[in-house]
Image (cartoon, rainbow over all chains, first blue to last red; front, side, top):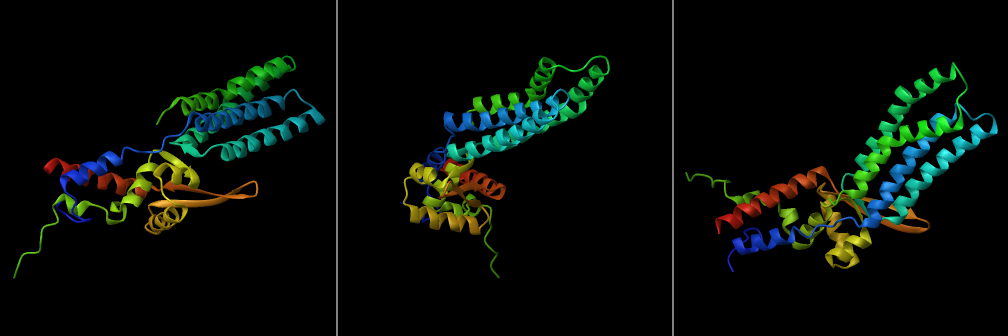
Length: 149
Length: 104
């Protein structure tokens, strides 16, 4: 055999190139854990934002507490359950939840406030609005769950 | 006066840190994910705890790998991730290997 450790032969180089294809890939379970955490983050963000127009008193406090419990709980659960973080999953997750916040603040909440001027908002309206807010997070959750690489 | 040797040959582009077999396996495995748990990586590349720990520390010292320690319940857990500098170095290393393999 020719070259030493710093001068690999073409055969050694080819063997290393073959070895380089043995990359870790995230399991379905890992991808699902991060996707579910993202989806629950978006849904709880939507529920928190929209329910403040229809919930009053203790119900409003309960929703706010539930939001933090679900959001932090989902993140901790994903961290504990998974053995890998899928490639770009954190970036996708952040984009999705940030998108939900922007949608809530710029579109859905102004629309709910406008509607409330004519008649009080109802729970079905708030739940529907929460689903709309969650769309970016649900979309990125689907990307995390379905992407193989 | 003799002319200094040219650095144009592909072998000069090989990364000495990544070139070692275990370190190569660690970086090659980690580029497929954002982060991997220590035990999972150890099982995947089939090395002992001590070997992985030592080689990963060397990669961390070069800025190629980031090691994060935390707890799951009361159990300590370590996570490893390849840094952007590590990804770039690995790409350059693979390009050099491709050049060497192509010249054969």
